[in-house]
Length: 336
Image (cartoon, rainbow, N blue to C red; front, side, top):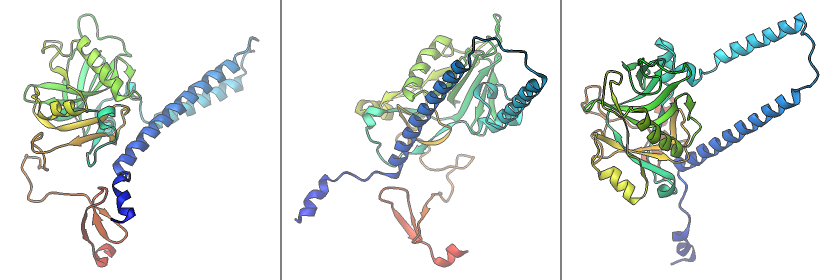
């Protein structure tokens, strides 16, 4: 065997595209956190430096006009930005549908085994059902599906989720949960938490969010059986460390719901809207009834769809590392 062949088994495996994107996502999270901390320090420093023991004179009329104009510009600029969570929890109609349709964190398909899988990842069996946001605010609770449309409008034991005799709570109190509605037992299975009692958890790690979810959901009474002020039951899904025993429990264990694959969460991942490589989904015939695509009636179409990458040399490949070659397009087809 040649010397270079002897060294080959000890070379580090190539980093996949999905692993690179996972590392970039974690780096962006850390950078955003540092920028937010720096902004807070600058704000505090500016406020302290602007303080003066000498009483200020009465502002002139021109100063008042400039200040009012500045406030008007700030308000118009704020309206052009995305609405914050507290205001979004009170939206109605098309505005609410458009906003909530863009807010869910969506997993990527697992195409490789992440680094440090047993140390840095959670795994749990995904319930089969309708993915939705559940929002409680102003004494009522609304669940919205992935397209933003309303699934249910009901009272609940979540913070500010029902108009009870002792009031519906503070106007600042609201709650947003990432759930899957399981129709067989009419239960909302909570897979993640975004806000709780007015406290935003977007920039918290999945490790903290899952801890907060399990402690607060039980305290609120949302896990209790349905009642007059609590129409649907909420239950947190069992989450496991992604080691051998955790994988076995999630994959083969008996759950109170129908399984639809496995979800893998990076423990350090913040809640990001849209697709993210820090949340992965795995499905096969042993852990999901929906391994292949079905139409709106639940029937298997005659043809399945696949997304391929067209390379510069006209080859059609997958995004695997190394890529799987499916074919090659003629130059005439590309020109058309």
